[in-house]
Image (cartoon, rainbow, N blue to C red; front, side):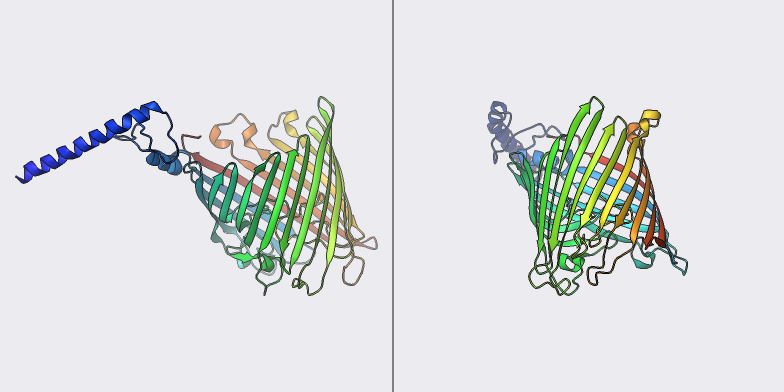
Length: 456
């Protein structure tokens, strides 16, 4: 009897399943895609069983449109200053990222874990890894969950919450060491008409050389204050023709800043063009002036000209900083035109001039290889408190950049990138040398990614 009952129950289940299939099939045939909230029958992934729309969306969310990325990076840094010890280290690491597809074209999650580990990190009277910003003090490596986010999008606008990547002019990843900066934020991004925008609240930042997130006031230099940041930016146009960008941030009682730039390209011949760019930024304290205890304000203005002739580019730029205070860049790499490998040239009152050239060595049979050389001179800088004149600075930079993607090599080798940089910095007071610094950097990047087989 037990066997007969089991057989009857199995038969009833099969009959019910068949009835459900018969009821659903006309709708599935009648419309290739159902309205939101309705179930659509599609071929099953296993055993020929039907697949509901929810199951299909979950499959797309977790597999078909998902993406995994592994970035390997090694970094050698060696700075020889006027006094010992030398700041030197070799580090390795990178990051692993996972990103889902869009569930019902609306919801997405992702995470990125980062690590930097010492390969060679001396710490003695003559050499130290401190100051390289590749590792924690005393040469310790670390792991950190730099990104962990959820995004919702609707009509082309996307809201992203928690730990995420932000690259909005003055608030940016500062990705010039082993690991980039990331942020805890709640932000809306999108496009309205011809303008791309970002608007959000940034609560905390993870710096290049630490695993912990700290609030935005602490990062600016106010350790006993807890404050977040309001950030807005807009971008318009095509940088290959004409483009305009602007951003503003506000950290209560600490700092506010506004940045604007514009660029336009004038074609002169088939392989000859001139690129003109200008920038202006202004910042100051606000509220209770908790950063320094007193109010302050300053500005930076700059202009740049690039002449592009085939594989060769010749450029020059000028930058001026206000004399009331140096310009602060606590939330990202300084984006002034004359920012160089070692110096930012943003001291109070500083006037700086730069000339340089870039050459694509593909023109002489070395595709994927670029060479850059420039010199920058900063003068008239003063101590904003005392008014005393500071030393003039010359910085000479050389860079060789290689990308295997431009070579006829196997696909697995194309993600390889190598970058070698060297900078020489000389300081003069009353035309007398007072200090010199030499800095070497060698960076290797290699990325492996996997992407699901199906995209919208």
